[in-house]
Amino acid sequence: MARRRHTPEQIIKKLREAEVAIAEGGTVAQAARRIGVTEQTFYRWRSEYGGLRIDQARRLKRLELENSRLKRAVAELTLDNQILREASEGNF
Image (cartoon, rainbow, N blue to C red):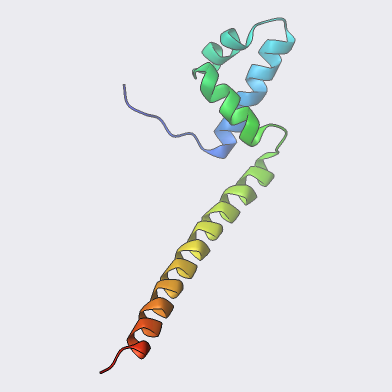
């Protein structure tokens, strides 16, 4: 089966549907089945997106992308710095 990627907006909408199903007396397994995901995915989504609004989820994803970009930049600069330091210590 092909793996499916959900947007944060879709995830929040599905979490709301699941919470309604659970509030109506259903189990977590039934709610997860109703929204088309496994229980493990439901719990992971709930821990990451539980209580967020759609605009907050978008902002969270933007910040995560920016954070990963900045981490890569720092790693590249650190590597360049180490190379220059080793080159300056050598006898050329």
